[in-house]
Image 1 (cartoon, rainbow, N blue to C red):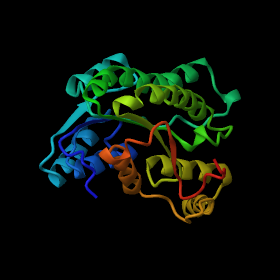
Image 2 (cartoon, one colour):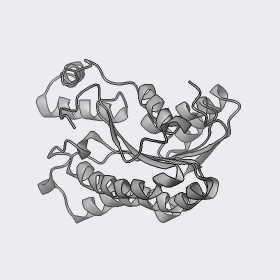
Image 3 (cartoon, rainbow, N blue to C red):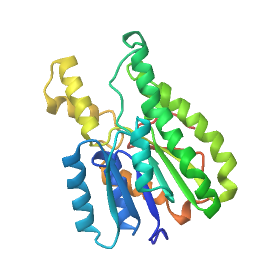
Image 4 (cartoon, rainbow, N blue to C red):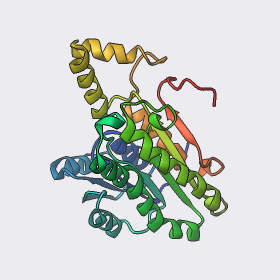
Length: 260
């Protein structure tokens, strides 16, 4: 299927690796020019070079910046001031229960996973409305709809982001601007490796045993591939997805237990 977005411009946050990179690659495969972002210069440039090599017809711009800061967001917007597509993304916080957190944890969590995406959205939205095309994707977490006590710093700020974005989606749908959230869980990324290592320490088991235990909680019986996530992201950025907005889309191999 041709997604009809070739030639458009995408700003993909935290995209030097993991799910952000998978989204950038999937968009580049559709002919979208991508501005990618990361903090580690070596990893970022390596990713940019690899995407350019795979998709020579698209423009790939790499911006080293910390998007949790005003300066970092300004650097990113200087490179891609008026994207057609915005992918809000940032690495998840460390697992902590409420009673293990402090004030600084919450300030950092809110800045990273709620305030940063809201500020970026605020800046790019007017031009999307004027062009009558825009796709905003927020990579959040399954913790938004199925909170767990040890993921307080993930579920809280991201639930807040989800609520604000839902309200926004109602205002901008008439401009052909959609706002959707992708909720990953149990995808084979560095984050998942971290969770495997955490289980090894908690239960005193091997990495292989921990991995199998986690896979056993997934109806699909396996971890998801980042490329699968990227393909879904690309579709919801496409010209064909204009009637879907304000939605939470779970990508978890069937792990989400609820009916709605």
